[in-house]
Image (cartoon, rainbow, N blue to C red; front, side, top):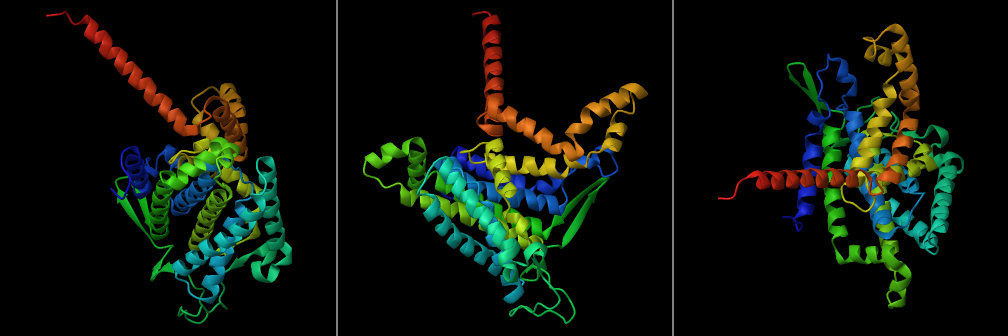
Length: 398
């Protein structure tokens, strides 16, 4: 099916199902229950799940297959975002031209950065990519202010008159897909549950499914095998007479185009762009997503992106008032003690929890969340096999 089979097909169908059913899966609690604060099925967050999933999938093609660790991928995210917003301001508010140009410009920029940075490997490569990203951030923040808007960034304004869009005078244009606005939503209600079906989310989800499918094809192609050879032993590969530079550059450019695609989708969902998207913390975030989920695996980066964005947007909202509500059943002294213990790890301290979990994953689960799932699967299989053997031993011979 679609040129993939076996476990790859199972993983692809799983990701597609999770993406399409996310509005239901992410709202498991009734809206009037105390647990509703853990619901994540609102459009803005769901869009971030899949957009950063695309970003992480692309980064995994470079880091997971070749072993080249880039600390500058946020530069391509930012370039893609600026290309998309300018297409919307000048040509059309239809998101397709903006997304296409985001991919093209990010790809061209990644050719330049990759051609220079890939002359080195290891930590030197990482430092070069970080330097390019920080230079890009500095240029967007100050030097290129006429093009980037500087500190305030760019957004769609009343004065913008895209060539192919008819906007009534005095109104601010909105991003759309052939007339369907990205902000359009409909709410389905079942008893005390509410599920938001958002146009923008399903556009992003469809793009993410296609991006994931392409990643599978890359992973299982001869090109993907060459990238694994680079990661395994690049020096030995060069000794055989094969030039690894074109393969690593191609992987870098493909990864940069994925980042540009994510940047274009971010603009399509929220038509405002600032230089902070190029800052080094954004590059570090995608590294965390990939390693946390499982570098070199197919579904790992998607899981890592969803996990980090969930903690950033849900766990960060848990404050002392919420904690007091949780432990209200305890005596006053014990309630205050439990709140004091948990408070540093939630709310503004959510990053501390993430850091501790990241350390635990690196130490005990080098393969990320995917390896954790595989270990659980093997554990249950072993227990089932032991139970079958014990039941067979108790059964008398006929």
